[in-house]
Image 1 (cartoon, one colour):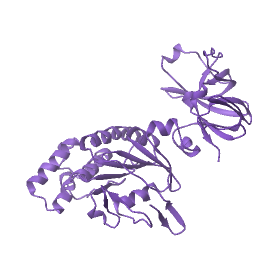
Image 2: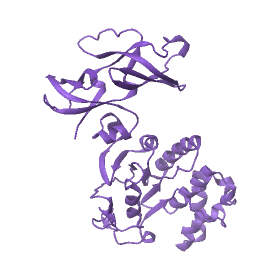
Image 3: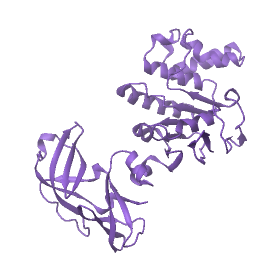
Image 4: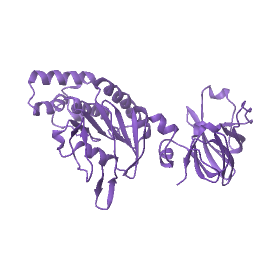
Length: 357
């Protein structure tokens, strides 16, 4: 599908196939086109080209109320003068469903979202998380084929967002309906999704499962947008079997797994995640049959964050970020402090090459 707004191409020739019952996320920065794509699926925008099919039926020209596709918006969109029970029952009453069936469906979904005790309250009497659960329940009560969620947790504080992530995953498992989730938060998408489409400037840069996107990014953009990473740019100066040597500017040569089968003379960006790099006061013992990357370095900054400590260290002309998890009681571990002379090291398999463009 393609969608333009004047000279701006918001969605540029995007093709997606989503499995029934899948939890699928559209992930990308603000303005990348993910919400426009969602609005086209919901019937609120019409594509300039391309068609939308739902279980084999062309729904491109159907208005939102004639699609078995419901949307949950960031601002909840609850009716303030209706009780929670009536908010959830609204679409069923509109469809002229028998009263007994409405009561059965509403009571069942209230129990599922653990809001039975709040049925006769009004939206202004609920917390943000409770309002979000009601908005989701209202969208699910008549069992649509697809539920679209447009940044549904953005207005919640961090702890409530984390709690709602678990609840959303549980609700999805219970109802078995296809969820399409729009977010700019990598953590949300990674923790919820079966598959993720990473979108940049209207294009899908990568469509894969969370682990594949994190460990094997398809582009420099994906590697930098999903979590933190260190980039080392340089030229391949040697190839030995499955491995190669990359000569970087202002940094010693790096040995890396040559999964792209690149040749001597080609440029490459190497992504190395901060948690893949080790930092120690003493040089590591050599591993049998392996040549690890070891670089004498200097500690520049340290930030203690409970679960891990983040270090910024310098080697050559480069500043490198490292995460050191606290798997043991911190006071039992060797102490590394500012300006210490240390060793930074990682295995060649722990970097991932992205071809320079």
